[in-house]
Length: 160
Image 1 (tube, rainbow, N blue to C red):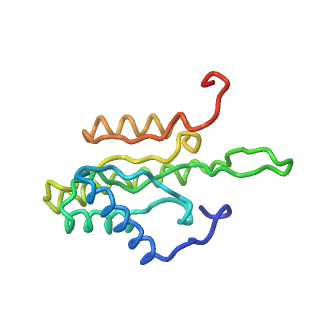
Image 2: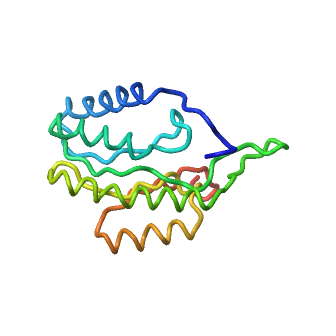
């Protein structure tokens, strides 16, 4: 996201190596179907289309059934000047990410491989404004694709 984070922690090749390793491990234990859990710690912003293309190709090669798509979000967790945790939002970046994600199932459809299927994979719920969640729900219904959503990750007095 321009202004917040401007460089990747790992190269594209390193991220693809991590993905391949991550796919082989569950396969060794009999897991044959998966949906990735996004991790932004090694990327400048999100797991983008190129990363998921690499994952789709690796899935095909390994014979794994995956539900895949680029991740997207509008906000990033940051610390305020007084040390409190907050989320800084750039709504246009999230909407652009959703549009990119919507094109991914079309790319997968061209592969015509039943092992790889499109899904919408927004990032953690606190990084998604309500309108982006609503747009995701509408798109999922319209395109008949699954949605994976991270939620219930924070601490709460109600959870204790």
